[in-house]
Image (spheres, rainbow, N blue to C red):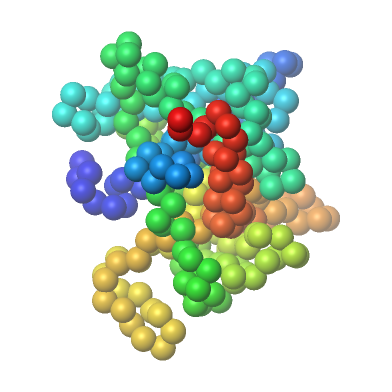
Length: 263
């Protein structure tokens, strides 16, 4: 496994999420780890597990599964660590309208370290969010990739998510129907909810009328839902994506609360 490869590291930004309701039904989704900077303390960051509000709504408990971290710092794909998330933590920091829920991972990670069950993950850094100027310069049609667990599927032996590819169906810089949302044309199915969406180009990419030699990685947002046809109820391969600037604003509103401020 080449952990210096950017695409390999992206695989470890996500974890499968299960939410159990009081009636014992279980829903599956995707969560990703996002490093949120603390205001006034740029050297410190808080890792959050981010998923959709609808994935954890009404759940009495949640589960997320990580790879254990080996002494050399690499992931152990044969050893998993299942983290239980209590009912309060699932929706303590959530917004039903945005359809986002964020769960602080710091206490969990520290506890696992103390009992010698460290976990391996990679976090999406705010530096991967396109600035407004860069966002507005994106083409109307861009290639995108998203990572997650559609229909709960994954490489169970190696504990790896699935990577899928598509294109923007509406421009990223447009507020679709007045929301901080854009659509993608891709194979989006239940379980993909919470999947991070990226532009990831290696080797070269188009920028306006020019071709740029190099690589590009941008965090565009999180899948909210797979859209269905009104009359038939069938999935039409269109996904609704909450844009990354809206995610960033929500997380900043969470970290601005007193319990997250360093003293």
